[in-house]
Image (cartoon, rainbow, N blue to C red; front, side, top):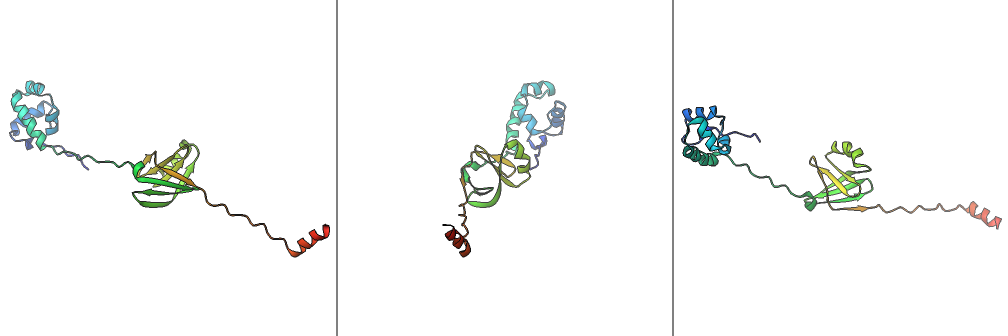
Length: 167
């Protein structure tokens, strides 16, 4: 969003003459007037403090207010399920699967992680890289894939027969 400055002329009662006097005193915008020390401006411009006080009140009404952006706490709306070297990250109920999991010293893998859209670092706790920011204290769980039981190959008939003969 472009930060627009409010002109002094937008304040009722300030015309070309007063604007010029205020500009000479270093007051270029309505924001400057609202933040200025009125006694000092009065001494520099010769404009009465009462008139400046009135303009200051009007200036506050003219200046657009910025809306606060409320950031959600990702730790409260996200979970991480780590399985081997991949993770499933759920944010606001939306699952993101096959997210790479980095282990080791954070300083060593950080540069590689920021190249990705989303990544997880697992050290003493899980750290999530998402939306170009780091998030800590995200609840996580580590699951291991079930180990496949290695089947012992069944001995052939001839191997069994050899063993029998050795007895």
